[in-house]
Structures are given as structure tokens and as C-alpha cells.
Amino acid sequence: MTLSGGTGTHVWQGATYCISGTITGRTFRGRYSQPTYSDPRFRSGNVEFTLAPYGNWTGTWTDTNNQPSRSWNGTCIGP
Image 1 (tube, rainbow, N blue to C red):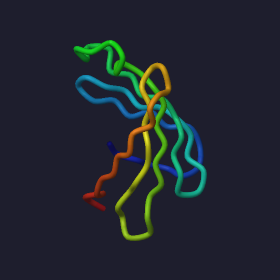
Image 2 (spheres, rainbow, N blue to C red):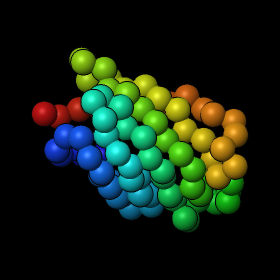
Image 3 (tube, one colour):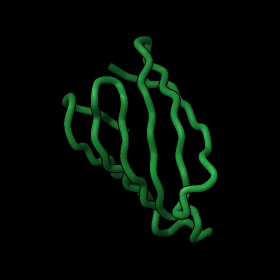
Image 4 (spheres, rainbow, N blue to C red):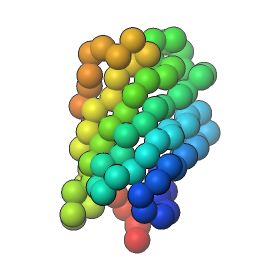
């Protein structure tokens, strides 16, 4: 994903997914969609993550039925 801009609505698209939502401060809240995913329970849901000052991020995601919440994290690369 690449983020450009600050607070507001953003959409990221990859080969098999789309994530869209709103950024407030360092927190992103939105929805994901991956319509070609093999298990229909995980084709869409909610996402939330917060960017740490040093570039890593942590958050949660939920499936179509909003349960259970799962943790996810990552490292930002690039400028």
C-alpha cells in the first residue's frame, strides 16, 4: 500500500484486493474487499491500524461477519 496525503478518505488497490477508509491522525479505519479470495467469509470486512512514529503499524481486521477480530501488523518501507 502507498499512502499519499494526510487526513481524509483513501483507497489502495492491489492485484486482488481493495482497502478504503479514512485517516485521522495516525489511525486508519475502513473496509477491505478481496472478491476472488477462496473462502467467502474473508472476502470483505473491516480494518483498523495505527502507524507508530517510527514506521511500524499495528491494528485489527474482522471478516464479513465482524467476528472474531484478528490482529495484524507490518513495517512501512520506503520514504
